[in-house]
Length: 522
Image (cartoon, helix red, strand yellow):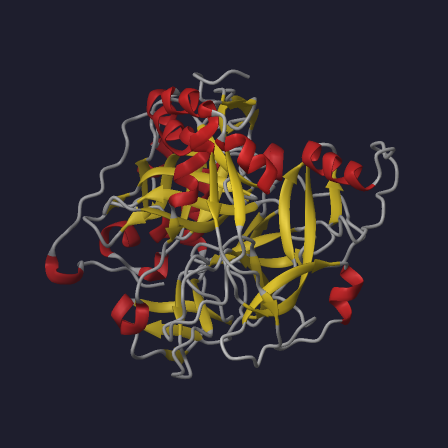
């Protein structure tokens, strides 16, 4: 593996090591940089408050981090990979119980999630990442550029947190504030993408930020300074008229008049498509393409708490009790529920297309106002809650890996096939030859065919992945996306080759303790 001795343009960007006690391990290794993200409890509490206030509003505002790599004009596949030591691997921790359902949507690992941060440009972003095994069960693996802003002054990003299983503002296993980012010296100082990986230690997770919702009047809502939210509810014309007669609630009601939608086929001029939730069996039999009754995208996996899953099940079968067999989905409640222990669950929804000529129906609405008490709670260590993937280095290429991440951004041609809401996966053999891109100083990347988009950055590449245990070995992270056939759609991606120097960076991070945010109750 090469070592860069001079930075591009001759300017050295200084990245100072932390004070003694935070990064002693890194000081012994000249190829490791260790930078504070939230070095103190007070700073961690500030970061936590930023993301959780107003019912996790900042999490919803963040957008996928990506960079315009259309300037990658020449890609060369040549040579192989030579490590200086023997191959090695460290096993996963907290392997999940074997599941009987074989759907990949159900067998997604709990360890994966989104990395949220504020870039040096002041914007809020997210990448992909995973919990990885470590001595203190407190470590996240992601791309180097998802922790270190090489584009803006060469510094670590701000307000870094990891949210495993994140789904539309929900944090099913808590929010984990980053304490310290470990990167390779060549990446943080010289922007060498052969070292585009980072291992971040995190404090204990914090959960329960949406507890104790209380419905209040609009006046109380406006005066409240804590977390709050609104919900628009469609009502009948009778309730609307009654509400408008009550001066105390006049501002809560609204009306939108128009004409109703008309059913049509997909070929009708100006026709638009909607979705109808159906049973899994109906979805499985539906055709793929464009037409009424055809599949509407992939199944949507909703991550919910155990209590939310129980409430959903009881709508179908009020007599159901925990421990009994799950009731079969019905026409009224078609979601397929999967319960994991007594802490979390998923509801999988299946949709088909319904085309119609859009009208504008008369709608009556009421706005409800809610406030949330500050019920923050220490939920423990990351690895104890979601497990941690294993780690491997100096492995041969041409082996099967499975990757998991959250694609969202557009392809260069403007198409946008992914929502960024639920994780996607790729599966295949890595390329046997090294990927070289001179413009990014890449000489030894590993390639994989995968047509994802921005937001998949930092997604783990898992070797020896067990679909039953939902565990494998992190052997790479998504670094760069490529359009190799010139059709303006990403079709390949690449990762740094994990060698003995990667192992050194990982080992420095894997042995550093984080602990709890003491301002939060246990």
